[in-house]
Length: 318
Image 1: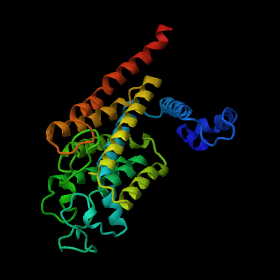
Image 2 (image 1 turned 90 degrees about the horizontal axis):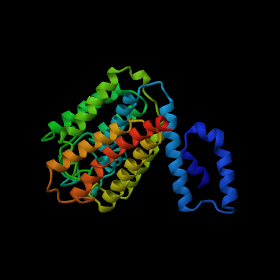
Image 3 (image 1 turned 180 degrees about the vertical axis):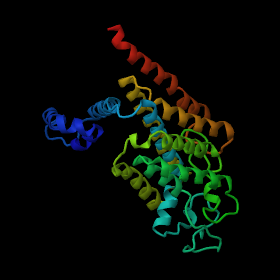
Image 4 (image 1 turned 45 degrees about the vertical axis):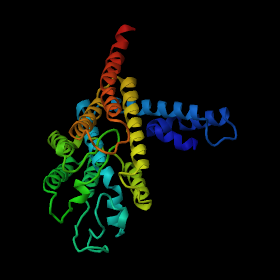
């Protein structure tokens, strides 16, 4: 467990101070493989700050370009989440039956039992492809996929390539109302941001390891194996908690460095989620009440801006 906690720190920090941290933990808590929760929280907080400082210290790209790149990753993940189970079932040729997400019936693939009406591909392949391309710093691949998301959402009725129920039906709620595939604000912003990255010397973009896909694969296996749909209360509460953790991490990184790049993805996600809440005020199922969701989405923006400004002014005061 102690070595797992070191994963919160950047590789450069682990190579220099990893053994020292492990020795300190072994001396402070002898015979324990896991430190107390308070120590875990402190190590995680310090790891986020160390990673944030390492990102800011890398001057190979301007802060706003890295912020837009982070925005595309966040939007692609947000678009993928409702379809984790669907992609998993399609990849393994599993007929989910009554567990399918927002489908009136099974048999939506040629190999599944049920009615003859079929679709060829799951819609979730588009945001998944976007996410993989963006992780590897290849926005020229992600931009056409995001444009295909716009096309699929705008022409969902009556087509068999991606079908319609899985796109027009129930979707991811999280901190607010559902974001459906035919609501084009999410896919439109993703396509625009990918296009900007593709036009701004994409060779400068940060390339992340394929290991970042491990949580995505784990979530896909969990959702598909346990038939956890996007309307499951457990699913909704878990992802609402995940969004809150991401907001806290972004705020901690901004406060530690005074850098504003994390404001861009937070603002983009807040805009998408707020639009969904305003457009669908009577959504019948939500993880948290509408006003609480709006507060959690909007309140971090001025708080992060103030923390960044205060951190930038601190050396001048001293």
